[in-house]
Length: 495
Ligand SMILES: Cc1cc2nc3c(=O)[nH]c(=O)nc-3n(C[C@H](O)[C@H](O)[C@H](O)COP(=O)(O)OP(=O)(O)OC[C@H]3O[C@@H](n4cnc5c(N)ncnc54)[C@H](O)[C@@H]3O)c2cc1C
Image (cartoon, rainbow, N blue to C red; front, top):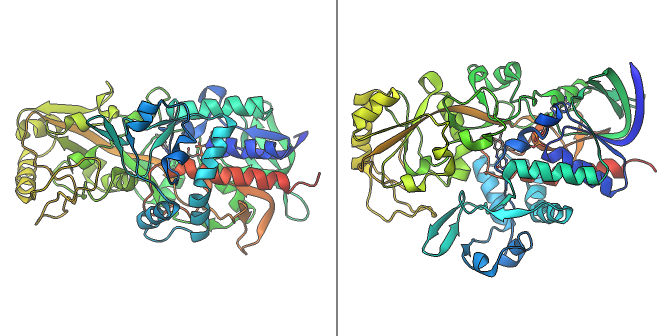
C-alpha cells in the first residue's frame, strides 16, 4: 500500500455538501483534497440530479433581491412571494417530521439558511426564481407558494457545474474514480487519513481532518432492504448509483453514533418505466409532482392518500412510500381537462408512461386499472366534492366530505374529458438515517464525544428528517452543514 502526500482536509464525496465543505476549508487557508468515487462524467452525486431548488428563510423582498440582483424591475414587480421567516421554516420542518427533528440541528439549519445562500452567491453561484414549478400565473403576477422560491441557474446540473468550476479556481484538488474505503485512526483514536481504492489500487492518504459527505445508502439494495424493510430492493433510485452508504459504514466501524430515522427515506412518485438509477439527461423529470390537482389510485382503482393534504412540497417525499405499499408498487395519477394546463413540465417529456381517453372505463383499460373499481371511486369522489373556490397557489380548503381518505384542498370533480392518467411507482431519493453530528459538524461517538478529526455533512447526517421532508431542504442542509464542517475541519488543524 502506497503512502501518499498529506492534505490538511480530505473531503469524501463531490456533491453539494462536499464542495461546500471544500470551499469553506479553503477559505481558512487549508489544502483540500476531494475524493469522488464516480468518474468525471458522473461526478456530482445526487446534487447533479436535483432541480437545484433550495429552501431558505427570508424576510422582505430586499433579502430575496440580494440573491437575484440581476432581475429586471418588471420581473421583480411581477413576483408575489410571501415572506418565509425562520419561524415558519422551523415549524414546517417540525410539522412534516412529526416533531422529531433534532432541535439543535433544525435551529442551525433554519437560522443559517439565508446566510448560507448569501455565501453561495458570494462564491459565484447564481439563482433564478422558480417561475414554472413554484408559482402560478394569475394576470400579470406570478404567485409563489410553499416557502420555495429560487433555484440555481441550470438546476442541479447548473449548481454542480458552478460548484466544480469554483472549487477548481480555488485550487481544491479533486480525484475521480477514487473511493474512500476506510478511515485511518492514530494512536489517540483520532482520524488521521483515509484509505482509498482508485485506478492505482489502494492508497493511504494522510490528512489533518476528514469530512464525510458521500451520501446516504439509497443506492445500496442490501442496506435499503435491511433498514427500510422488505420490498425496498424493488425501489427505483432517482439519482446516483454511487451513494451506497460507504461513509456511514466507515464511521460506524470506528465507533460513530447512528442517529435519526434509519427506517425512513425520501421517496416520491416516479415514472413506472424509469430506469433503475438516475439518467443524467432526464435528471429529475421522471418525478410526477402535480397530483394535488387530481387523484391518485392503485390498480384496483382505489384512492389511498389525501392528495391535497398540504402543498406538494410537504407531502411528495412521503407519498412514494405510500405507493410502495400498493399492489405491484404501482399507482396512477389522474386528471381531467380542467387542470391539465397546471401540470408541471415533467408531464410533457417524451419518456412518460401515460394514457388519454374520453371515458373513465376506457382510461382504466388503457392503464391496466380495474374499470369498475375506478368508476366507483370517481363516482364517490365527485359526489363528495364540496363547493368553494379552487385556488392552485393557496391552501384553498376546497375539499371533499364523507370519503376516506379525504381530499383536503384543490378538490375539483373529475368530469371534463379527455381524462389523462400517468403510471408511477416509488422512486427513492435519499435515506434519512445516518451519523450524529454536533453544532460544529463533528461526528459524535456512541458515548457522545466528538471523534477527533472527523466531520460530516449532507445526506449521511441523521437526525434532521423523519417521516417527511420540506422540499428543497436537502440542498439547504448540505450547504449549511457542509460549510460548517469545512470551516471546523480546517480550523481544528494546528498550523
Ligand atoms: C432526482 C432528485 C431531485 C432532487 N431535487 C432536489 C431539489 O430540487 N432540492 C433539494 O434541496 N434537494 C433535492 N434532492 C435531494 C438532494 O439531491 C440531496 O439532498 C443533496 O444533493 C445531497 O447532497 P450530498 O452532497 O449530501 O450528496 P450527493 O450530492 O449525493 O453527493 C455524494 C457524493 O459522494 C460520492 N461518494 C459516495 N461514496 C463515496 C466513496 N466511498 N468515496 C468517495 N466518494 C463517494 C458520490 O459519488 C457523490 O459524488 C433531489 C434528489 C434527487 C435524486
